[in-house]
Length: 130
Image (tube, rainbow, N blue to C red; front, side, top):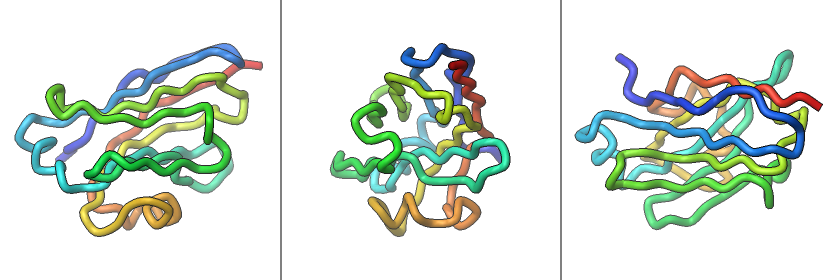
């Protein structure tokens, strides 16, 4: 049963912007209020990697590759997690996945193997042309 659904992927030019969204049923999202939530991505031929995480207190953590360009945020009233991606680069091309995890956050969340994250989405594709 899919609990998280990503949207907002698509094509963009290098230097452009996209905003990804991750939603869940109201009851489901509210149950994640104490969870860490974040984004992973997998580029063609590469290992899946953590991109950004937001803790229940609103603190955020970013991978070095996206720091200063991506912004993670959460709107509990709309039951939605966001990833604002600015100044996109060709190397940002990847499938992006939303995830939620009750046990840890921050750098640990970004470093963990995606398969061990408790709640995962199906992904949305982002393609950046140079």
